Length: 467
Image (cartoon, rainbow, N blue to C red; front, side, top):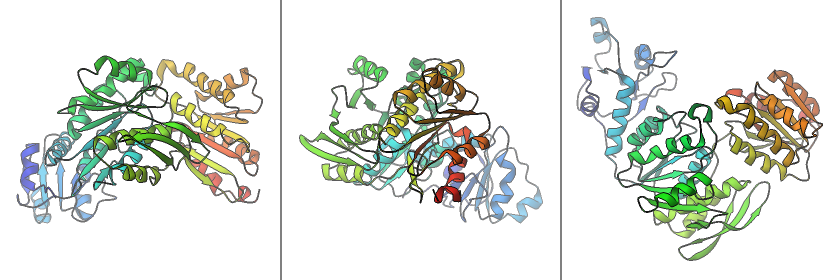
C-alpha cells in the first residue's frame, strides 16, 4: 500500500500545518461528518449552499484524526482542545482535494480504466470492473460518484489495489478534463454520444468534444469506443492513425462483435471471438444495451490479457448498481423495473424497447422529465412519445413539466390509455388503482424527478400484494 503522510499532504497542497506530526499516516478521507469513521482525515468542501469547512470540529468530535480546511481562524482554546489531532489549513480545500488525489494516483503504476459517455457509464463500469477483478484486485467508482468530488475521493480509496475502474460524468465542457488529469487513465472508454446535457452543450458534436477530453489525462492514449455510435465511429475512422483506438459493436464491423444474439426479458446470450476462439457468453440482465456493455468489457479485458474463461465468468456474475434496470417482483406477480436514476432520449429508447419484450404481460410506462435539455426539451420529449407507440406500450403515465410532450405525442398518434399529471402523488394513487396482477411497470425519469419514491410507495402498498 502506498501510504500518504501528513508531510505529503502539506507538500502537495502547499498547506500550513497548524497541529499534528508530519510523519502521521493518513489512510482514509471523508467529506461528511455524518458518516465519518475513526481515523479519517476530514476535508471541508465549500459548496453553493453549505460550507463544510465550518463543520471541522464536528468531524473531530465524531472520530476524525485530522482536518483539512480553508478560511478558519483557530483560537488558542481550539488549539489546546485538539492538540492531539491534525489540522492543516489550505487556501482552497477543493483544490487541495484535487491535488491530494492527483498525488495519490501518481504513487500507483496500475491499469486505470476511465469510463465516460452519454448513457451507460455506470452499468458499463459495473461489468468492466467485475471482469477486470477476475485478474486484479480492483477498485471501482461506487454508485454514481463520478463528478469533481466523487472521482478524487474514489482515487483516495486506493490501497492495495492492482487496478481501478473510474466513471467520469460531466454537464459542461472542461469538466472531464479536470477528472482525467486526476485519474490519469491508462485505458479510456467512451460508451456513446447521445443527447444528455445537450441543453448545456448545444449539440451532439460539442458533447463528443467534451467526452474526448478524457484523452487529456492519458500519457499514451488507448481509447475503446462503441463503433455503432455514429459520431464515435466517424471520429474513430478519422483519428485511427493518431491514437490507438479499439472498437466494439453489433452492427458495424469491429474489433469485438457480438453475434448470434438471443434476448429474453431477464438475460441475453451472444457469441463473440476472444483470442481467435468463439465464446458463448450469458449476460444476467435483459436489454441489448447490456450486450454492448459486455462486449466493451471483452475489449478491455483483451487489452489487459485476461483469459477468456475469466472474461466469461466476470460478465456472467456481475451485479448492477441499484436503480439501473433493477427488477423488483412483488407478491402479486407485478414487476417494477426501476430505471429511475437518470434519463435521456437514448436511455428512454432502450428502456422502452426492453419493456416491449414482456409480450405476455400488460406493459405500463411511468415516464418523467429528462432534464438539462434546454431548447431541445420539447422535441426530444416528443421523440419519446413516438417510441412509446413504436414499442406497443399498453398504458402511459407521465409526470413533469416537459413530460406532457411525451403524453401529447402519444395521444396524437392514437394511444388511448394516456394519463398526465403535474403532481407525483396524484399519479401514484391513480397508478395504484390501475395496476393489475402480472403487470410490468417501467419507471424512467431524470433523478431530479425522484420517481424512486413512487416505487417505494408501491412496494409498501398492501393493495398490490393482494391483487
